[in-house]
Image (tube, rainbow, N blue to C red; front, side, top):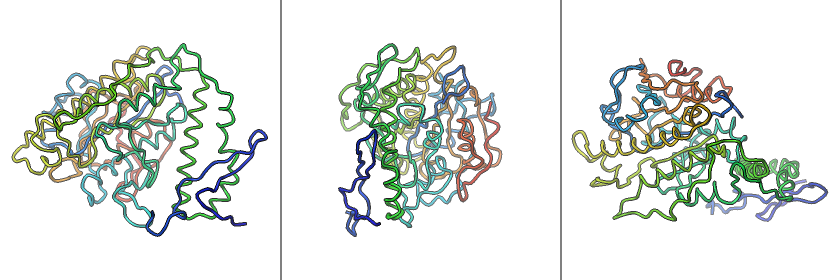
Length: 444
């Protein structure tokens, strides 16, 4: 029998002899027409994440001289000098999907191997058409930790490049204080501390199972968009239940796990310029310790958003504006790229400083560094600038420059990273980005 639905509708079931209920998210039918596990590496797990910045690079000054193990840092990569032996540079790849949306086509191609998304039957340049790499990998390894994945940003923006599916973005946390409170505040248990057991948690953990049959019947009455909203809502509840379950467990026996000092309450702009380096480094340290404590194994780090017009130290105008207006070799843009690469290097060093057995957190992870295009002025998506830091427990080369011999499909890198992280797949991407093989040369 078809039920009457409204915003007060609850999914009901029985759990331990008691009635339980789960509320519904906001569905389209409620609105008006306006739409008002452990891997190799001595028992330490693999970790994966990406580190992104907007507005590209200056191609002629990015690509290193020499290939293989015999390569030299280019002018824009010089800030990587201290971590060069832990970096693999991948150059010469191309995103083959049509470059219809400047600053959007590239990230979609790198993270999904496909085009920007379709929502409600119409093209939507604000979403991906599939789950992003980080979330595909989180599907494989994210359930082992309290946080399936952690998304952070330096630029203050809710825009995200992490998607669990079309229209299902994961907004980043851009407040260091809020990130600290979320990860290391109430509920955090350091090694040696006794976990806090709440007798009500056992009931809350399995509430979705109790209302499962009611939910199944409800979805038969909904359209495609509302079914998607229900699935996303349930996924959020599942995530909460998984976090609750982790609170009951003993903390991992990880020697480097510790509760960090709390960051400042705020990092206000100074004379109109955001404190990018200060915020980036606090976020780097917090994220590194979150992984050291095995609170998460998947992350995304968004230094700046696509088309970012942040005012950098020493710059006469916003970043995006300079990529189009500065003449010649664009010395201010070059300086900005070097500042960004310096922050990437700091993040890599933060991972390398954390010992894990005879190795480090960096040895047991891989971070994909990328941007939204190659040359910012032209929005090109060939000669894509790509970096890899770490070896994912020895699976990937380091201290290496892989130069594609024939503008290979950039999706090959995504395929390789999926397989490296244990995702059993025979393909990656769609349309022009579809591939069934990776980049064998970067594998160890």
